[in-house]
Length: 599
Image (cartoon, rainbow, N blue to C red; front, side, top):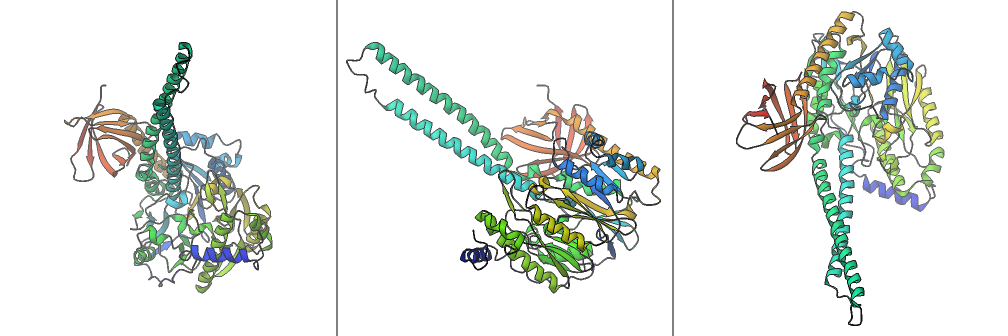
């Protein structure tokens, strides 16, 4: 493919991309300047204020390839300041302790007290998105801002899984139809070879062979029917996105604040909007950058979003940028990185760039189209940022990739972690991707290293994170050092007391779950049965059929959250005895009395 901009094919792609991205690539309407916060709120800025790096291995990280990336990040972070690793249970804590041989700086930092491992209920590793933002109110009390969280990555994986299940189901249906056709032909056709001259033995053998073949077809049909029924149940489960909701992630900011802040007397603010942390970037002048995707994610309520960002996040103004194109995560931290003052780094997808052109010319047409759309979107973003008074450093970006397992993803060097130490020096972790367009990566890293000047810049191999729509910034959170348990004046006694409280709450939740696991039946006349599995899944069985559920125990073991295809419900747990529990719904519906099933 000719990569010369004068070539007709190049311009055809440009026109195609312009048409495909008429909404996303064009400069979004310049939003009105938001008013100042209605309450005095000083928000933490990780790019200029000293911070504590928070890492959150997933709840089932024993075989998660992201764990090594997270521990590599934690090890580098311990060399410049405090680190907090939040784990979901004792097993995850043991995984961290068992990694000391491979990551010795982690355990050295534990011994020095600059790295702490705390148990905080959570499921996923993307703490940037579900974690809180922290500030200080006019009265000096910490304010923990916890917006609603929707896990795009999990929703995307579910949809990919449903498409794969649908593909398998269609294949089996076609196989079943072919078997029906063969069965019909063999059943209806007369054996032309059974003439009067054929001997009895020959006719018998042919008849038996036909009977055996028909029997074999019937057996194959039964096997396919069983597989189709199993696929039907799987598709039904995966069609209910609520069953796989990240409720514990959405609830974790409160528990993280309890364990990470020096003063546990904080205020919890819940803005009435859905905002992932990776899609809200605080800039040096108090403005907040996000993508236009935040508007449809909140039902098109742009005015309400701007009010919430001004009131609850202290955003002086909101800058809406176009997201990266394609079925990918739409967060601003995938292509934008604050550097210093009014200088920001912005991804450049330029097929005419000497380093990029050779890769673009050899790329598949679908990748070329994506890149042209990304080029138009980022060029539009550069104009918007310049209109708002920012200096824009364009950094050559790697081409998007299409993986059979992961789908489309953007390996981005700009999804970086910036941490400021106690002396005001910055430390930057840039994600890199082994074996992929490494000359482009080297050029980008060199340009960023020069831009950050006196900062320490290191790289983290993050290919597996990129395949899951993230990188270093997405896998980390930075909270203010001066408010944390690492701050001066936070005594060991205070720390141990806070950790003990969190540990006791988690223990209560674990105990309640252990008591609930098993088979239960309703005391009423409806004969409904409940089955609670040990992994948070279960069933409701009754006259209406079978419902698959997902459940979790919250609030120190006193609340049961149940998700079905009809939505989510929370119940207050009241234990009458080890074999009798009363579930009181948060709605006005009647309570459910369950007794342990004997069958």
